[in-house]
Length: 201
Image 1 (cartoon, helix red, strand yellow):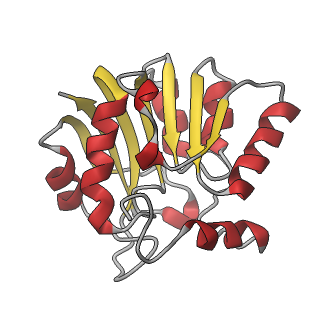
Image 2 (spheres, helix red, strand yellow):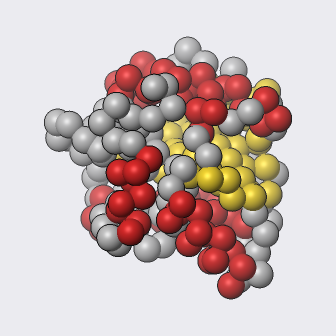
């Protein structure tokens, strides 16, 4: 069952879209990512966004010249995002697929991975696999820019992510260039997001 949470399965996520119960959805691109782009800290090129949801980051990056691949195994997410891109006349590759099962054609393909509410959505036992898969998919020296959700609560999803969790899981395979609580979070996530800029070793 490496592809899905033991607690939350594909049909569980799909139900959220069918009932429009998406408390995690900000309705906009997360402000810290906008700032990273403005500061030229996001390397241009091929970007992967796992667990993309409704894809606000996908739309933002596609509209700013990135070659975007987005992955979500919920039909509701993929349908919504394809419609959003079409309405804006933007291009992107939207895959209804399991991030953990992306085939070898994705190996060493991406310059950048954007992490936004996916690491906290998978079960903690899957985090090691998330890191190893990210390493597999990134080019040598590729970057991972992420917002990691510090819920300070038990259980999930979303599952709590501390600074130590990030260091423990990523430091073996990535250089941690930046890791701090971002002051730019959307209001509902103020003081709850670690911004991390990581580079594949």
